[in-house]
Length: 479
Image (cartoon, rainbow, N blue to C red):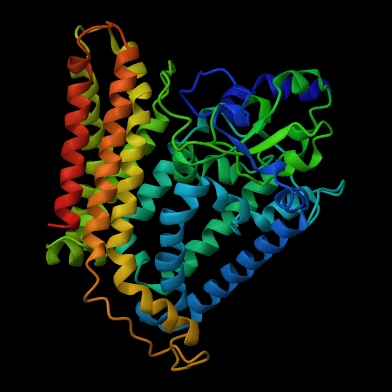
């Protein structure tokens, strides 16, 4: 118990999203929440480990099959299951369904950490006493979103080849699962998911916008329970009472299954319930990741949907001078241009100079307003290539290796998308929603920052920053 007490003292920094200092809330249906655990037919599904295990087993089998197809199937990306299902079907589902509607729901079935976690926990379905690994704690200086943002930038710099070369995709997947296994055998809990995985990084960040949350029903019940069973059994090392937002919870439901007090709720809530309240931290990792996601959406739109053939060609020729220029531009956009412009916009909203510490705090606080802007920019970008290429999913189902098979009779299926006019309209709608939501958050947060008057003076620069970004995305996607 002494060791558990020491760990609990460190939960705020390990479990909470950087920058969030709001107090834990007891959520109930009276606060606009619907507790899904109270729904009769849903409860047994959540309480049993088998549905989640079967879902994870299916995704792992698909993961292994994708790697094999990527390594040994057709080198033509459009005819290879690995490319179509990872970068079209899965990516579209992640951006349009999993994250907006389920937060970190993909993390609950993601195959990447599964082999390492099974070794670490000593069992496929439940935890046992025969476990492997050193169980070290993740280094404090490496906590937060920094590594996840950096890995996303590395993958993004090679994105043109990654999205078209099945072998590269397969080797990246193999590398990620190998890294996850290695970290599971050295560090405790899901160190890879919480601190390294780029998918986990932006899923967690944008989970604050989703309508799903796992929370305790009554904080007093948890405080009086000395064993802290939920924390000891959580694969993520999350203490549910300490959750201030949904960024750290992987929705594995293990805490719900082991809680002896039946004090956990899985709530449906209003969108964006975790954002819009002041944060007083000076940690900038969430702001940095939010800007990286915005910059990457802008760069990918320019490469894959923009009018510059030379830019697309440069992104494909890895190692050439043209690619070096492209990579430098991509990194410069994300590491210098957007952070500097964002910092200037935040500074312009301050009436007087109050020091770097206050500026860092304001940049951290207003980073919340970047979340809807970035999320809906990714939705708009995803729509740009998802609708016209839906037929290829049916094609590779029948011919996954690209060897001329026709297993289900859909290898030659064609969907006429030339008359689909909803694509641009949906993209415009997504960008408008993201912009209006962002401006509303900027105004709400600015109202909480001193001085109390001159709200327009504090919010106008960041609103202009958001508008310029949205217009840039609109031009690249719709023209």
